[in-house]
Image 1 (cartoon, rainbow, N blue to C red):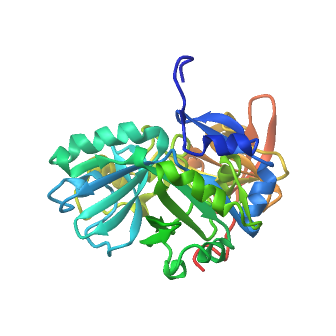
Image 2 (tube, helix red, strand yellow):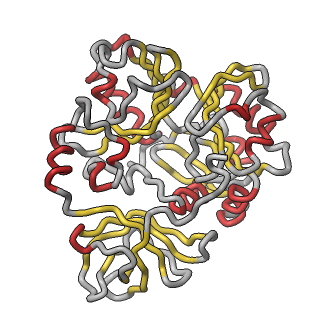
Length: 366
């Protein structure tokens, strides 16, 4: 970010300041990293419910037949067989088969689609859609019209019940239109924390009213990007700019289950080649032998202290009471449960290669 770049603010900026949140630049936005503290906000999410301001995310509308508009070719996942009011996770790739962004597609109607993308990549993604759709009239960027509040945690359903009739009918990766404080809005159930949770797309200028109303409940606490990062690492979810970038392919990131190889998509030829020939690096999870936390600038070494990769995300996990992380290593160096070292040339600590999912909650699909 340049010194002259103006950071964008969500509709809840003043609310964060009133709650004495610590604000930081994030993807071109000024966002709350924490309020009371990352550990307490993590605990609220895992035990009760937490509110996250995710209004920086981008939202697009695409209208028309999924193949005739070119939408199907832009996305890696299958969308033609999606039931109405369902959503799917997937990616958009460049010609080299690397990840431009990851996203979620919602099927609003038979030929109407709602796409949610990352905030830092919204403009880049919008241009990619415009360049590859058959007509510009198919596409509308509605990011500035919608605020987005995520309520996450095992108590989130019970809390929303008092505001939203029928919310308990939503299954995992489903959505619907609901009346909420007099507004007809889209509410989905996907989540990024590994807990039961809902995402509310609310009119931008009225998002503050919803935020204030939900926080009147003593079981709900505001949570920032710090807790959100810990929560998503604990369940092994990738973050754009860390585990996935335009230099990384879905094959390397372990995301092939979100690719439909039976259809055409941008970057398919490169990805198929990797599928056939293998990849030189792969994403792994690892757990520290202590409370020491890995950092993004740390290197990964094998037991013989040979550098074999680098850390993409790291944190202290309150759920495991240990440091955990994600990172890329040379594929030929991968061995589950193998001992590794994390750090730099002068200072290293022991860790063990694990699966990428460190924590599982019973609430996610309940």
